[in-house]
Structure formats: structure tokens, C-alpha cells
Length: 376
Ligand code: NAD
Image (tube, rainbow, N blue to C red; front, side, top):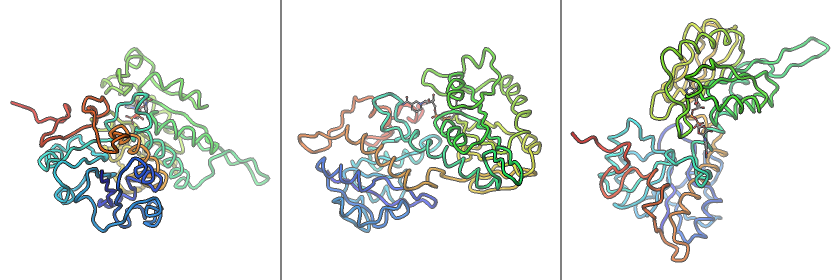
């Protein structure tokens, strides 16, 4: 069983798919581990630490590997360098990327998308969406506080009083909850909104105030899987009016709203941005999925009227050491389910629900029901 840890090739991807700690665990499971030279540098893991954990370091990895660990989906060039039948595990970003999935299938790779991991108790330790979103929510508040240029907590000093910053979190999933907790810890006055009614109690339990149009549609706005539904035009208009009034009084707004497999909902219009106070800051965590904020530019901080709109890409990557450590652990616990501990070799149970939910390609075909080519 040969495991390769690749060097990420995309610009703006400092994370790495294994840590020295997980390399040690793979060794204990009977694997040989090869790490691409410098793969962990941007995450604070020098080659020497991987070597000390039992890995060998190589310039190019993957050619003879049974299992290739990546953060991002492999490029065409990378795919060509892997052997037929190799298993590749990464955050595959499969929606809207059918051609890339077909290329992996055509190369005979068995590929798994970590972000499709079911959110069930057994798979909690493999949940990359949660491990990365949690860090992104934290980092969004830190970025917001830095860009804001004023203090977050109320400060009563001999020279006068600094008011507490007002922070508004839109979308209370994993990222939003961590953003609320972080902003509260910094002393801000925090409000939050979401379309899922279950979030109201969560927001309040963190000491923040909940803001939403709580009508009949809102009461049924959660799918069985716990995700948001796309709301009706009428609901969106009512909610937008409420948000428009609220936003005028906010200092920092952090948006995290996503709907699986769909573009991010637009929650903040140009008019709302224009109505904000001078010096206010908006952090759009959904910018890579189309953005929640009108005027947000992926990868840039832009001044739009009174507000700065922050559109950082790969926010978990802004905490690369923490993000890599958690991602590596997510991969380890998933791969652990694929290994026969006695024989010390790969033995995938193809009927396991975690395998079925995450497997994109196998035996030359795209096999995931959500991404299979449509037959006429
Ligand atoms: P997400 O990243 O898909 O979306 C972020 C938030 O945006 C969600 O709370 C969503 O309701 C909200 N949203 C969508 N449209 C909106 C709109 N128009 N206005 C305001 N908010 C909007 O969410 P997530 O962080 O992946 O969490 C999704 C669900 O999964 C939650 O119920 C979470 O508790 C659950 N979860 C379960 C587990 C587990 O059981 N293992 C782990 C993690 C998350």
C-alpha cells in the first residue's frame, strides 16, 4: 500500500493533505508514504518533519502510488502522471465540473470527493466542510476586525468611551456559528440571521440576537438533510427589507450563506452597501460560490461607497497550518475505513454508505448519481 502526498499545484493553495502526525498513523497502518518535496512548507511542515515521521521525500510523487492525497482536484497533467486504478482523495469541487470528472474517469482513477461526506455521526471526524468552515468563520472575524480599524469591544477610558462594534452574521452554519462565537469573544454586539429556524436557538445560545422574518415558509425552510432550501421570491423580498433596515446600523457584516449545488444567494444589494456607515466592513465568505454581496470581487478588498467589501479566496488557507492539520485528520479517519488492519492493505467496502456518498469515478466511469452523464 503506497500513499503519495502531493504538492498542491494551484496558486493560492497553501494547504497540504497530510501532516507529520497523519503520516505516522499511515505508517502504523502498514503504508509506505511518499511526500512531494516542499508540499508542507506553506503549512509550516518542513520535509524533515515528514521524514522524521517515516515518509520519504520525492520530487514527483503519484506515479506508482495506490492512494494519492490532495487538497484540490488534480489537474490534467497530474491525472496523466497517476497509474490506472489509483485512488485519489481530495476536495473535488464536482458541481459544474463534469468535464474534469470525466477526465478522471477516463484515466481509470477511483476518486473520492471529501466534501460529499454525509453529515452523520459516524463521519463527523471526516467532515471537511465543517473542519474548514469552522476556521473560515473564525478567520472572517479576524479579517473583519483588522480591516475595520476600530476597537471591537466597548472601552470606557479616561479619554472617552469607544463603543462596541456591531457585527451582523448572515448564514448560521458551521462558519457562521464560529463567527458569532469569535465576534462575541472580541466583545462585539452580535446579531445573526439564517433561513433555517433551527438556527434561532443556536444563535441565542451563543449570546447573539436572532433576526429573521419568522413566517410559515421560514418554519419549513430546512431540508431533511439539515441544509437550507432556496427561498421563494416573496420571502426573499420580506427578509431583504428587514435586513436593509438592520444593515444601516452595522459596523461589520459577515456573510456565509450557501445552498448546496446552487449559486450562493445574493443577500446584500448595492443599495444596502451604499446605506452603511462610513468605515464599515463586509466580509463575503461565499465569494467563491458567486458571492452573497453585490460588488464583492473574488480575491480583492474593494471600497464601495462607505464600505470595504472583502472577498478573500480560500479563507481556510489563511490559517494554513490549522486547516491542513484538520484536513489531514479528516482524510486519515476516512482512509482508516478503507484498510484491512490484519492484512495491512487496501480493502474498500464498496457498499459502505460513506464510500457510496463520496465516490465520483470508478472503472472508467463517473459513478456518483449526482454527476452521471444524462442519458437521452
Ligand atoms: P452551508 O455552508 O451550506 O450554509 C451556510 C448557512 O447559510 C446555512 O446555515 C444556511 O441555512 C444559510 N443560508 C442559506 N441561504 C440563506 C439565506 N438566503 N439567508 C440566510 N442564510 C442562508 O451550511 P453548513 O455550515 O454546511 O451547515 C449546514 C447544516 O449541516 C447545518 O444544519 C449544520 O448544523 C449541519 N451540520 C451537521 C453536521 C453533522 O451532523 N455531522 C456537521 C456539520 C454541519
